[in-house]
Amino acid sequence: MHLIERQLQIAINILTWCKHNGHTLSPSKSCVVHFCRKRGLDPDLYIGNQLIPVVNEVRFLGIIFDRKLTFLSHIRYLRKRCERLLNILKVLSNTSWGADRTSLLRIYESVILSRIDYGCVVYGSACASNLKKIDPLHHSALRICSGAFRTSPIDSLYVECFQMPLSLRRQKLSINYYFKVMSV
Image (spheres, rainbow, N blue to C red):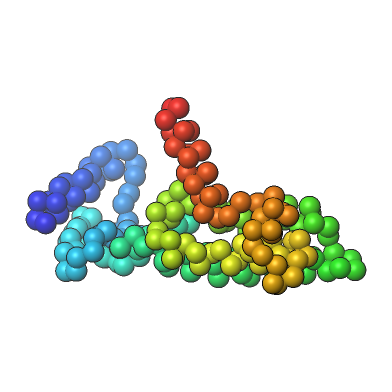
């Protein structure tokens, strides 16, 4: 651990380069997350003379990384946020003055499904039981968009709304990302 800590500290000690090029590193805005399942192996890293705090989870580019990379906190945050956005569909699906099915599906895809898709290449490595916590949200949105009953089978909802299950959608987006990276 001391070797790793020393190598990381050498990588952080770029203050002379930063001062020369007009950049600054703020210790108050920096944090350390040690991605490891073992406890008590947190490195002590410094910017200048100030210790960088070690945290259990950090939000980076909209994705919450935890120290064990289970992404459970990100999935909970995503579900809570999308449940609030699901109320938009509930209001717009009124039978007397609401939008039609295609409009509701477009709104769902642009408002909710885009948030689920964002970062799925990263958080798609979480265990299946954690990823399944997003599925009821997807199913209820498809029920609202199609006007189906609560007891209607999920497979028929997928066919009726021309949507894929979220697990297949994550695989498709991951494969597309893989081929995009490999083409470059």
